[in-house]
Length: 245
Image (cartoon, rainbow, N blue to C red):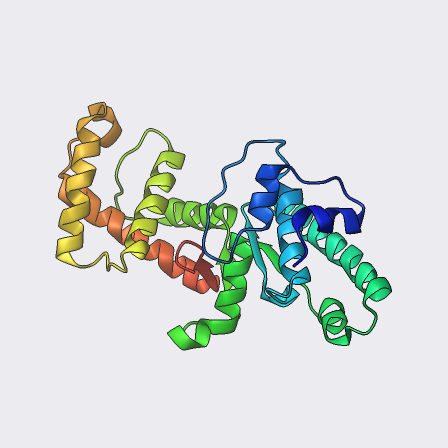
């Protein structure tokens, strides 16, 4: 088995620290690694992937890397591909007869995406299994806000009174997300009662001008209706909430 230090030397890279080597050489069991800014996280993750591939623990296309931002995904993906290319050149020189390993390095590569992008791929590939359209678009936070804003501004029935429209939009988005998380139907009386109690609690901490004197249950029911309208707008746009994807 090639060690993390030996691998770094073969690739012409600085040797990892003891802590980094422990991460690189850890087993395949789940593990959490806490590291601060500038500690070499990206390079360590790339070295971890190459170490696993070099020791035949996994094939390149069996690796999945997920990040929160596109910038981080692009940087990690680029670093991993570069290190794997370096390792392939080492194998071509030192082990030219290992055709199976070389074929893997040439024909496959890891998947590195943002969480949202990977969820979109899953929806596209598996949507038919759950009765959804495979060409549905994933709702990004920006698109979610735009659609919710459209629903709120076009809603013709009374709605909870907030000092600013963005506050109402945030409320609709948050409630829609919670209903989706629990697969709950906003038209069910039990759901309206549950959310109505929470709405009453929030209103109790606000100035009366924020919500007026109308019955809270009635106002919340109308807000639930707004949530249903919001989800109808999402369906018309062919979109899928990424929180439920």
